[in-house]
Length: 432
Image (cartoon, one colour):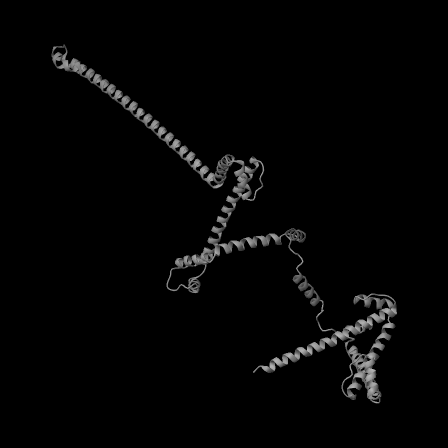
């Protein structure tokens, strides 16, 4: 810069002014370029250093921000964990912690009481008096159980109220209106207002207490139903309850006897020793022949039945004729000897004597048939009727007596049926 300022003064004084001036100008240009390049390089260096410092400062700031954010996040997580632990503790352990605090405070309070006052307090709550430490422990335990029972009762009350509210909310508007009208409330009301009204009325009518009592009864019934019979019997004995209720036993016996046919119409037992007829042959080829044979057998049976019936009618006519030939006094004497009541005219006496004769003939025929039976088959028949077995003569007599008893019961049944029918007929005749 100094050379360039002196060049206009020194140029005319130098020899070879033209060439020297050009050389000097060239040197000055080179020098100027170097100076410009140097200043530009320094400027670029300064700008790069500044940029680098800015970048380093930004990176450092970003790192500080990230560290602060991570620290805040960790702090939030720690606070959230502490809050979660506090919530979990409040849900699960708060009650236990409070109970422990109450127990400690109550023990301290009870230990400060005199022994006499402590005994009165224990006996007043149904606890045994003893050593001071034992009484304190028993009282604290008893009071904890009372508090637990109160909490359970409050939980049941909440459960019952919520359930009743849900039941009412599930009803339709017309159903709620009908319930409100039945409760004495009319007019236009919103659904929620109707539900509140019905809930209040239900609560005023001891609905909560009744619902809780029903819950307890149902739970106890389910518990007893799950027990076995032996455990239930032991519980009845321990509680002083009669487990064999007379009315229940009578009802069950009557039900069993009814299923066994005890109250059905008595039916005299017929012969069970008749041979089973062989079954007809199967097949299309033998079908026509079997039908013809069956018709022939049926015709033969009908013929025998007609003949037997004619013989029975002839025997009955002969027997009646024999009784009619007797005097009235003789008939009365005969009936009295047979244990029958003597009433009516001679024809009535004849019919009564004839009926006794028929029964005696049937009994004699039945006795002869039973005597002709195989003894093993006779024993089986008595055993099926609950009769004791023995000698053949005794078994025949026992079986005949049993059949006579059944016939007598059948006659009594017929009399009762007649009485019932007569009573029903009279009731129907009285109606318009």
